[in-house]
Length: 406
Image 1 (cartoon, rainbow, N blue to C red):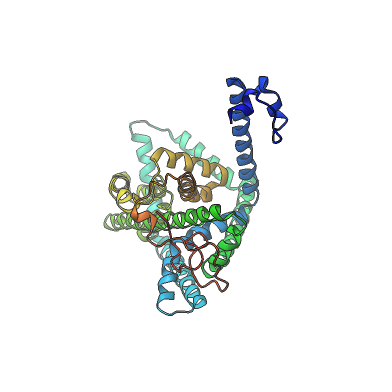
Image 2: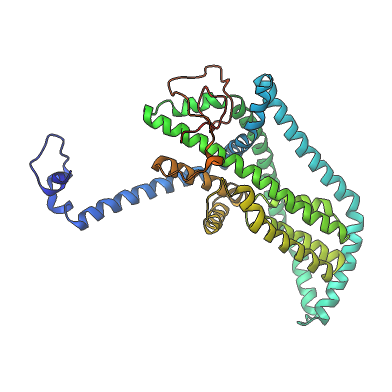
């Protein structure tokens, strides 16, 4: 409508701004309006992020439950297709997951208690070797410098700062426990009543926008599920490779360290490598620098295998994000929410990019990422919540949770 900005005859729908064409009609005026729009969007984004970081104990469990629901919902749907009641299917999946996590934690604690005495003896011998290496190495360190560093560590451990940090750690542990319980409860309702939640969230939208919202939710569910399953496989292979190498090299706590590398693998690109540095330190203290260098070489090889083979093979069809974007997302997530932010940054970025492409009409998704079932009519609502799936997947009435429209 060029006349609206070019000073045509006033119409009944003209706003006050359109009565001053001399101010807004030129290039600078239009650029100013666009700049104000961009600043408004950025201000809204800042407010949303700030508000979200004020309630991490609610937001982080909610996001973790949403991501896990996207990964677990195919198992729930498989059980439903084989005649399981919905509540029993959801509870069975949750019990299996909690049993696996509990078994892993119990095994790690038992192994640490079993090997702790040997680790202490080997650590003392390793510290003596490290002392000799520091004194006679390429960059000699005097006994006075070593004793001064040890004195600083002892002073910190006996100071009030260490006690404050310990209390802070206990508070954080309590928050983690509460968040874990909340995540389990939210995950149960996501898997059981995902369709009702989805209908509640999208029901206020106009019909055409509601259809796009269902498509976006379906594709986001596919991306989240593929990301979690692919990341879990890659992390398991990283942990297996490092754990087997530690066993071969006779490094203490090989299995717990392998599991720690597996957990670190859920942070893309840098997680497994950072977690593996603990294995390198244990090998250095207990077995000496030669074994530590061997562990480091295995860690680098596993990292290269992950980046050049496993990630393109397992997640190339669902995660269309450049490595630089992933690094920036990890940095931003870590700054905003610490370790939890680093864990959630990449899947949330992938979902955001999927939503942008879907709403703009440029999906760029192949058959593996789009699914095959159509989005159902938006006028039908499943009152009993029998369609299944995570709150992001599919639309009511399909039973697929991954419905999509080409």
